[in-house]
Length: 216
Image (cartoon, rainbow, N blue to C red):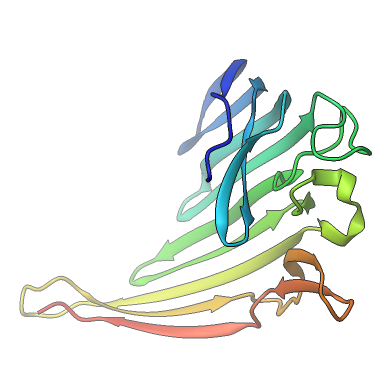
């Protein structure tokens, strides 16, 4: 039991642009990938089963950049807009149609931030964003009970180096704050529970961590 799938094949195309920037670069890519006999996995009675989901299509655009617009300040980012759809109807259910969204494929993903340094001090502020996705096996045909609406998280880090006279590498003290805005968005959804409400995971509350690195 387990492998009930035929081999998966795919074909696709990609177009990219690259531009050098001050202290970095800008890159953009367009892609279109069509997959035949798309292989998906599911758990049945504790066993992982692989099955085919017919023809599917992934299209999208990816942007990435890094630059140092002014002295001691760096900015960076990565963004992907994703269109992932079934190309056939009736593959995972009788109501599933061609064009329905695939499971576990967010509409977008992104990371952006800035970092800076001055003397022994350095720091960074960055955010991660995740678009909506259907987390049930049947994609958007399963409806809102399996729809995760997207979320974001902001983190902050600050470091201070201390030099010494012994010839060792500098010691470093750091502070890291995760979920800086203390948001409580749903990050995972597993559908209705036996009692009725949906089973979900939410973001961990704001947390602080202190680090110390001392070479010897």
